[in-house]
Amino acid sequence: MRRIVCVLTGFGLTLALVATGCKHVPVGPDGPSNVPPTQRASAVDRQPESEPDFDAIESADACIAVASELEKAGRDKEAIALYQRALTFNPAHKNVVRRLACLSARIGQDDSARTHFEAALIQSPRDARLINDFGYFLFSRGEYKAAEKQQRRAIKLAPKSELFKSNLAMTLAAMRQYDESLEVFEHLVGPAAARSNVAVLMARNGDTDRAETILKDAQVLDPSITQTEIVAAWLTTESDKEPQSAGALQASCECP
Image (cartoon, rainbow, N blue to C red; front, side, top):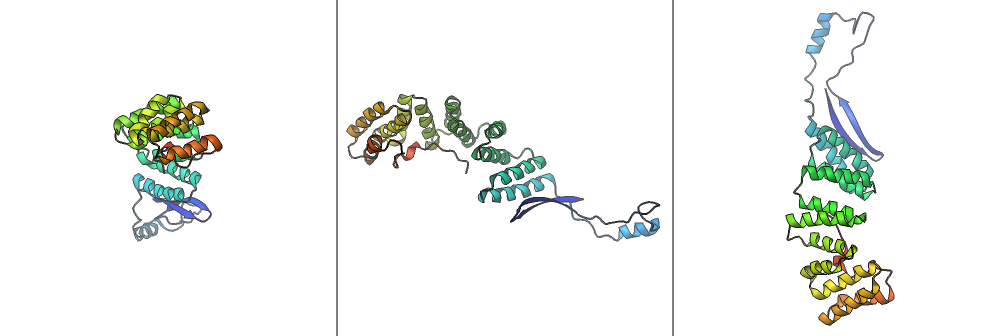
């Protein structure tokens, strides 16, 4: 009988297979032992009962617990190995597949991340946060049309999420669909700030003339808004740096 033990040490992670209830029996020329059969039987009868074997779910949970600690320590590759180990015990564990997707994306293993995201979505097709995370992954890889599809799915499932809508506005602007992007931003931050946001996104795309024009519109709509002043300064003096005030302009996911 054996149980799985996940051991975390200063030198790395070890998966130990600990055998329990096993006793060494010397092997002689006439069989497993030269001890008479009756004596061997009585010796076995006197052994204490072995500890119960961990079932698959408990083994998976043990590995997941250690993998979670590895994540917190920034040891992503080791965490991935443990999550994969957990899946050998419990392939249906939904959160494990999701964590594998996020961690694989984080360390640049795009093919693996995509595979895990797709598998996670099969398990949880109506999980809006998961769908948004996949959309963010696609956006960050420049797959804007595919990202838009996932982001719209997420918004349909969670229509009140400002995060999902902000991500969609970012994607639309990346595809130069500025009017649609502006419309989404207006619902989130108002007309003046929305134009400041779109000005930044236009500039990112190299459309600086259009960015300056729409920024002037923002200043007319609300001369008091400080965001437009910061974006204007960024456009004219330091367009190679991001303006610090454009908080709505960072697409994000909920993969920690």
